[in-house]
Image (cartoon, rainbow, N blue to C red; front, side):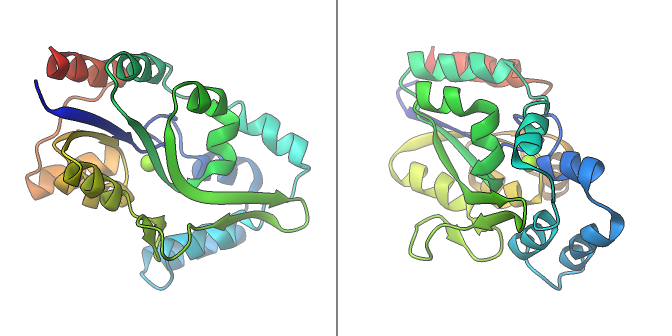
Length: 219
Ligand SMILES: [Mg+2]
C-alpha cells in the first residue's frame, strides 16, 4: 500500500481492559458520588462535567492512588502494535475522554519511547480536591466542550494530511471517530453502535488483530 498510515486508539477499555472510571468507582466511590453519571446519561450535564464531579470525590493519599492505578490491567499486545508502527514510520495517537493522569502512570515510559501523541484532558490530583480534569484550550483543534477532546477531529486532521486511519475504540466518545476512520476496530458499546449504523468493523480480540491489519496494509 502506498498510502501513509496513522494509528489512533482510545485508551480506557481499549488499551486498558477496564475503564479507569469503573475501576476507581468500584474501589473508592459510593452511589452518591456516582450520581452525576446518571445526570450525564440523562443528557443533563456533559461527560466532562460528570467526570469532574465524580473524580473530585476521590479522597485517598496520592501514593495509594498511584499504586492502585498501576494494578489496572491492559492489553500488552498493544506494545507489539506500536513497535510495528515504529518500524513502519506510522504515527501513533492515543485519544482519551479521560485524563493523562492515569495514562502516563500506566504506560508513560512507552509514550516517550515510541513518540506517541496523547490527546486528552490534563489531570491534577490532590487529596483535598480529588482528581480534576483540565480540557485543552478552546482554540485547540481537538477541543470539544462536551468531553474535552474531539477524537473525530484527530481522525479528520490525519485524513486531511493524506493518512489512511486505523482506529480502535470501545465507547460512545469513539463513535464519531469510527464513522469517518478508514479501518475500525470496535468493542462493546462502540461495536453495537457501529453494527446499528452499518459501519464495517474488524475482529478485535486483542491488539494482535490490529497488528495483523497493519502488517497487511504495509505489505
Ligand atoms: Mg474507551
